[in-house]
Length: 121
Image (cartoon, rainbow, N blue to C red; front, top):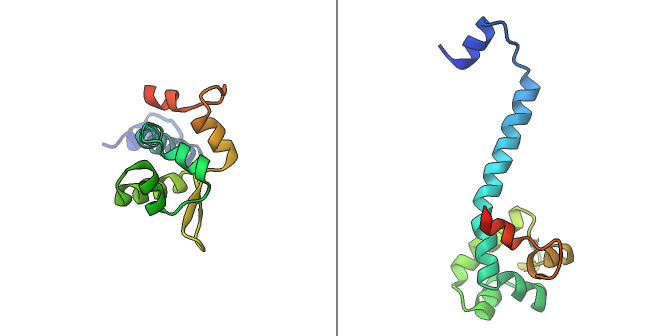
């Protein structure tokens, strides 16, 4: 017997909307957990700082500036863009670090500085 069947037999009503909301929230949290390693990598490798200092860059430019492999930088940038950590301009093929993310991801003196929090995760 499934848990759903057991709940129904016990007289509990499962609200489909609440169930979907909870599952959606849990999926978001798993995504955030998986992204934690990418934020730590971006901090440790200087990827965020390079984007902040140089402005919009193509993956090969960011890799060159940070002494990292272009293939991995491209994948990292795509994941960061999907999560809203960096922005992407499809016309130029360049990625940028918006000012708000620059503060939160590169300014160690800011109360909004986040990389340490991601290291804990």
